[in-house]
Length: 347
Image 1 (cartoon, rainbow, N blue to C red):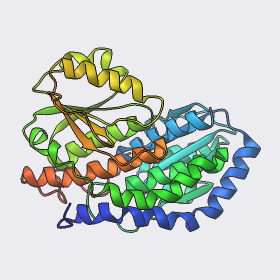
Image 2: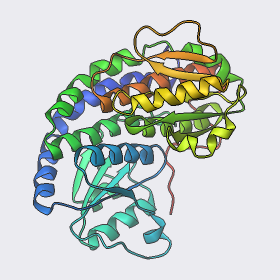
Image 3: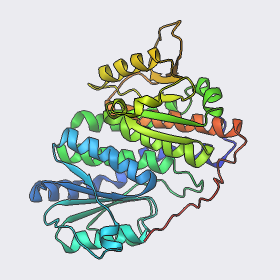
């Protein structure tokens, strides 16, 4: 990937973002871990929009997988439009926003805090209205992000949420993997996914699929294809795709599968085999040597497995690099997506 666009340059900054977090997050994460141990929430409620909502979905997987606590997204309009409130006394309210300026998120955070929730803001702008209203602020540490499409802030947010989970659950394996993540992101940005560009450039619509740690990654990928390449893409879990959407499968409808590196791998491989037999244009992430002579399947390189959740973050880094090349093939200015601005404020 060349760094000829602002988006490309910011993708390459992601490793430094993750590295900066270690020191900046040490104190607030320690405080949060103590408060969580004291309050022992029974549920976590997230609140986010856009790419941040996909990061919140990543948090759902992390917290449910390692803390065993259910996570549900809130509808901000309950507070901002309808003037209502959720009963969240002693629960964890997790607001995720790069800018921290959306009025509906701020309204929901105010309502959650008033109800007695422990409110946490994961934000890039620590002097934002959202940060001001929450009990604890976890900075993303991405610095200015000038490209409209969020890349380094999404990677940084996912890393913050992984750090939160590791601190809360005292998961030393996850914590150690996060310390290796910066270097791995640097490598992931330079993996060659160019095999996917020709088919995606001629597609009218496509599907992205993930499961477990890669479901949120598939959702973020679908959004980026819309934002930066004007391509309609829809994301599904590998299991959900079989409950109806599989009827879409055909050679005219490319499918991009983000393969998890955990217990969900086997079911995803079975799905890939079924889709291949249907004659789909299938693109699958894979580490190492791949089988030869398989029709209708293209392998996209992935790093060697290290830890499932940090591996998933590396996959979106590789995808981002491909999107820059895809937008160039489509003659689209990736830094100026049509109809979009950097900060989207909703009420």
